[in-house]
Image 1 (spheres, protein in one colour):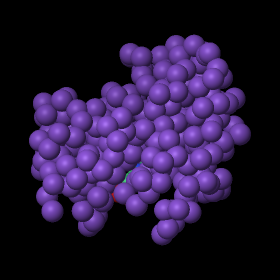
Image 2 (cartoon, protein in one colour; image 1 turned 135 degrees about the horizontal axis):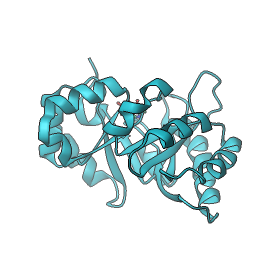
Image 3 (tube, rainbow, N blue to C red; image 1 turned 90 degrees about the vertical axis):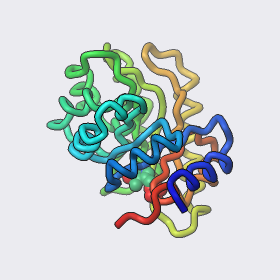
Length: 218
Ligand SMILES: *Cc1c(COP(=O)(O)O)cnc(C)c1O
């Protein structure tokens, strides 16, 4: 199956209001060009350096689509990240938020990454820490908090991920009920190739799909 076929099948399988992010780690510029031609409008990259290389290789085609950072961001990469990405989905500390705010030269949209599985070695804030972080971030001039992102623990069975998606959805609704400057809960980014159906059932409106679009990673 080609990327175009895969995308058409996926686009038909998910509700219209659910945005599809092509998770593009390890993919070549040629693969991403095919994905752009197929109609994909949002690409997710895990690493600043990989995004930089791919965008350079794509040239002006890169400007026709949106780029989201979906991997962890180190403070020393923030300078480049604010130039490369339209949305940084993985803010998980006030320190990182401040670094982005200081270096952004335009209003920048970000999501809070939620460690919904409360896994110690994983990125993201624990659900109960999110409210304080969002309240602290509301005062940052250049940041727009537009939603939440979560990975959830990796399971073979996507049903096992459901409670973590539910937790994140409840938090999304809770944080959306406040009226904080620069904060609006619009994006709920959850679900990957093996779990997007469950994630959408639990309220996801943005899925991040790699394998189902591009095939298995080499
Ligand atoms: C790789 C990746 C995905 C997509 O994973 P697939 O299983 O290939 O669909 C989604 N989100 C993040 C953060 C990723 O790193």
